[in-house]
Image (cartoon, rainbow, N blue to C red; front, side, top):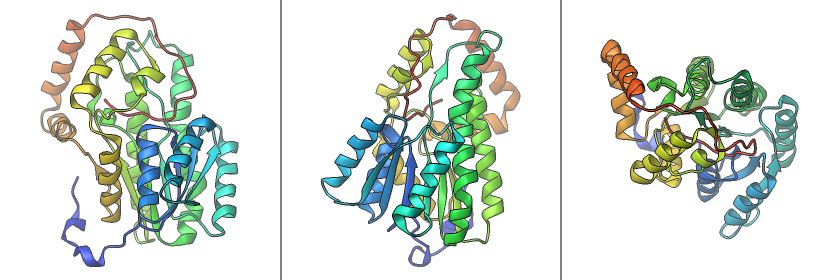
Amino acid sequence: MFGLEILIPIGIRPRRSHGARAVVTGAGSGIGRAFAVEIAERGGQVICADIDESRADETVALIERNHPGAAHAFRCDVSRREEVEVLARFAESLFERPVTLVVNNAGVGIGGKRVGEIGFDDWEWALGINLWGVVHGCEIFAPQLRAASRGGIINVASAAAFAAAPSMAVYNASKAAVLSLSETMAAEMSGTGVAVTVLCPTFVKTNVARDGRITAQSARLADTLMRLTGFSPDSVARTTLDAHDRGQLYVLPQLDAHLIWRLKRYFPAPYTYALGLLDRLLPQENSTTTDRSSVSDKTGV
């Protein structure tokens, strides 16, 4: 989880997040908005992409108060390859040079049903955004990043990528795939000057529990945990960008994420048994409370 980058003197580390030519997806709220604001604070220019253009405009307006001309809104549905291709062309045209930082953040929350009760529509909807959205961002922007020979890519996953909590199969699978994709890209980009970082938080105070396809009981639980234990999106964004500057692959910004990471790896059988026991003790429900595809941000196990 922690590499030799911590031994590199701070003064000679490339500050990739400073003065970046950046694209942030899901920038209309939550972690995505926090990334966009922080990148502008670090002297960068940022394209705030979101499926909800009004939310993207709000982020741009927020940035423009202190950094006129540093932000640009762009409507993009990351689940549609052709729209991400248009976004990439817009970025290269706007900056007149390749982008140097891509934050694949857009995603949706989904949970509360066991495998066999989920339905293929929910699988296709969530994977289209959470997985294919990141795949599109990586595949399409990788050539620009390589051409820049500096900078990097940040993929927002979740501690769900390794926590494997019951009744969250779709979300878990999508985030595990993003984690694996990021690890693979880190190896492929080694030596190119392009860094890859994957963010795996637990609960962050965002709108994910209200905007996804989550059963009522699961949404109430997520809201409670976010309120009691959730980190602010601003602190998560700053921590991640600082880690990215150091060339750090994994970012687990909370203590509970570190604990889950270690328990799962050191005690896999007891960990799985405990999750199964918890699943049997909790009441089940099948109805969803929210079904919105215009979701700009997500996080949480």
